[in-house]
Picture 1: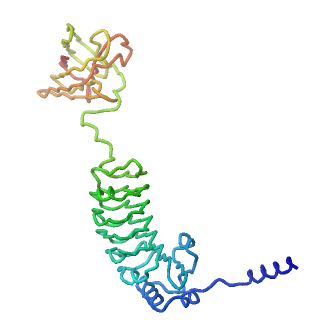
Picture 2: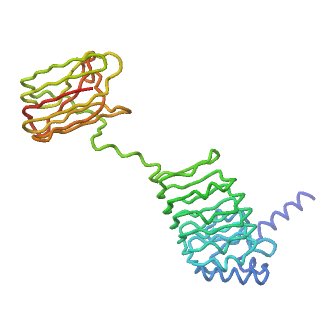
Length: 343
């Protein structure tokens, strides 16, 4: 008998139709229903396009409303043509509100909504954000707006997740006053400095503060490939005494790219200055970066010698007992190539 009663109940439940939006809105108090209808009109949405759901169903349905106890507790209209939140603000029991892809330029009408827990205003026209007095707000999404500062955020003690990516922010210092923040997305803004807190999971790619430092104009990652096409009339001399070092040399003709060994390698490669000059053609001289990876180069042309500071190379091309420099001709043979290395 119990089985039969259960079967009857299941069959009855299976035959039930989901409530329509008209049936759900009839459960609303008159003022609440009037406000919701005004919101639909402002959004350019027909009531029949909005799906009545439970509160958890808001996340899965781009146009949906959740009604509970005669009040609207959840609303999502995405996208919409809403430009003002004044009618929305009359829905005082909202716990979830998502109005993405609209024309909203002012969020201040929502200030003081004490029940609001999730607010999504992504893809609107916000140039400033004035939101305060939302004691239960846990998630706030204002990504893809036009914000330059977050100074209007205050009195949001429960806010844990905040997304302001894709704005024009130059200052985000106001976030430091939000005690419960755990996830912060500030990617793709204009922040030269980033706010930080040890408890945050921060995303901030695409800001000047996270951009790699530009390489110096005379920095390269790799040396040219060795190519000793024509190295004629070479002469070299120099010495090293204690902390002093001086070497100089000359090639009557230099074509290609090759290391120039200077001194037996002992200890750490020295920080030196390389000067290069040329009587015809052009030539480049290379040293290692003083700190970090890569190399520094200088180019010399007739009447325009070059000078660069860096570190001697350590046997980069087979001279494993020598410290050296590296020379390269540019655009053909160079004549009268001279170098001088000092410390």
